[in-house]
Amino acid sequence: MKSIEFEMQHNEFVKLLLESMGDGVFVLDPDGFIIAWNPAMEKITGYCFDEIKNKPCRILNFAQCFDRECPAGINDCGILESGSIFPTECLLTHRKGHLLSVSKNARVIKDKQGKVIGIVEVVTDLTELKNTRLKMEEATRRLGELNRLGGIIAKSQVMQNVFTFIKASAATDATILIQGESGTGKELVAGAIHSIGERRN
Image (cartoon, rainbow, N blue to C red; front, side, top):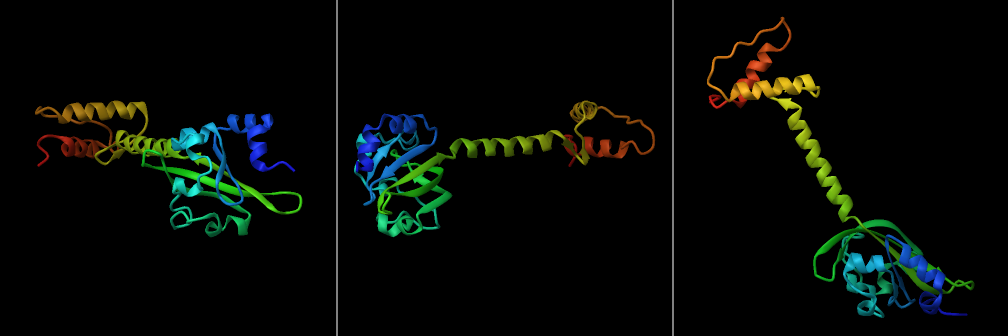
């Protein structure tokens, strides 16, 4: 039977499959040394395959995967006993030294006799997702500011126009007359003008 390393290097279908994947994929031999490394893994880690080949996966220094540092060897990480690791968020150390937030999962590969012949690990870079989440939180915060002025909260275009008038009124020293039916929020508008005006103190 051909070894898993031979299949990784000479099976065209397997090579094309690894190259086409958007997630990082690497394969370890039964002793925990890297024998395959796809282009996405190069992009995520900064290591090319020639630099990483036959090195232990500890070189990636995965951290905080299970509230502990990367184990010293394959026998300490628990993958051989469990057979698989479900997607877990952790940190990976890039070749240049900075930490990346990633999700990783792993599975033991066995032959027909049940003997372990390798381990495949999949790594998803969460940097873009985290950046998008931060942008969304900032946009939500700013939207809250845009929709709130003094004690007034509103989203409609008409009220956004009122907010514009309030800001313009607050920026002047002129006397302001606020008119409207009872219950339309004249006191709220007066309070908003006062709260953002130069003379509020």
